[in-house]
Length: 72
Image (tube, one colour):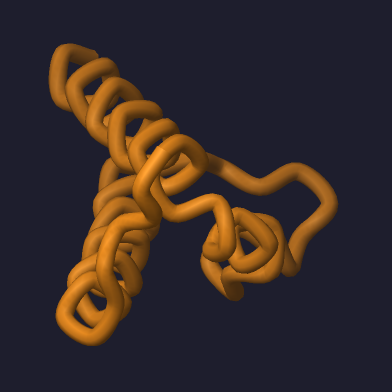
């Protein structure tokens, strides 16, 4: 159960970073394939959560490599 909590926290942190520092990417958060369940009652396994975190991290790193953070 501790791993699931750690993954939840990591996902929350990276999501908040995207929303705060890269608001232009926020639209993509809801469109990510990993967030769209293909069954009526999806099970959130550690693997699914890790895959989701990795997809967020990858998106952020690719974007960050080519764009600067907007100055507030």
